[in-house]
Image (cartoon, rainbow, N blue to C red; front, side, top):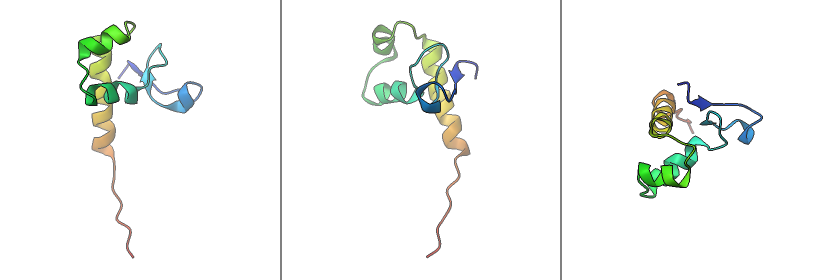
Amino acid sequence: MDRIEINPKKLGGKPVIRGTRIPVYLILEMLAAGMSVEDILKEYPELTKEDVREAIKYASQVLKSEEIHEILA
């Protein structure tokens, strides 16, 4: 994923779209709130459709590799 950047000096290391300070989570929140990709691109003209797709793909891969550990009482 060459469109996602993780840099401790940008937004505390949160994943952002490369070359911007737009975090992946913001794009996902806008989509979850019902905004269309076109709406997001109007709000953030520096983004491309591919940037939005890459944000979704990144989140999917992070969740796919997430491990759940059961705590025994």
